[in-house]
Image (cartoon, rainbow, N blue to C red; front, side, top):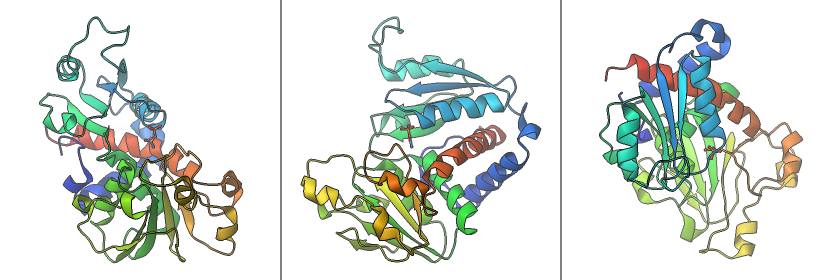
Length: 289
Ligand code: CP
């Protein structure tokens, strides 16, 4: 695996290898503290980010490597002159072993031909594969398996790249009962569906092991009332064991009262990001170019 581009490219074994490595790192972080000494990661984010940007930066530093930041826009006053993002990235790749890239274009990352190993950290509304590896690691830690469980994913499934990658990732595992909950106009595009799913156009989940609230930014396709009907309130979780996940940032799709309930796992999920991002960098380093 030279690049992390799409969850469609991963086999079940690839995913398990990265998650087991993340577990080793979480258990014995000191063993890995010089694993990427002398290597450089360029963080090239052309869209805003908090978790993924500081997460990869911290992960690289904890592996003993170096980090360079490429500033957000070709119009930034940190750049010498406007140039194409492709040209910027080509130059950056001469200095970096890895490029972690976030960009509003779905295609730019797929068409890049650079020497560095590329980590897709979000390409428009298409995919966010590293988020999915964090999500799968969290599910594995919380329920102890990645086969034989039930999960509902709710929100703007048309546009949420984390949701697209998660559905592709889940399709690698066996006997998963996957329910997709969204307004009809914001349903999951068929290009991401290659396993059996149950689709509903309301926010009615049952007793799934996991409820993944994919997020629901204001969308022009739905009324405020319909959007509000997908907000998760504490009262509906009474007596349910379902764990609640969310890639964050939260807009308003999860009531803050849930944060202190035993169901909430989204901040643990975010914290798991460090170990998984370290594992992704190490896995890529160990993979042939
Ligand atoms: N989950 C996620 O991608 O968060 P950021 O946009 O803050 O990186």
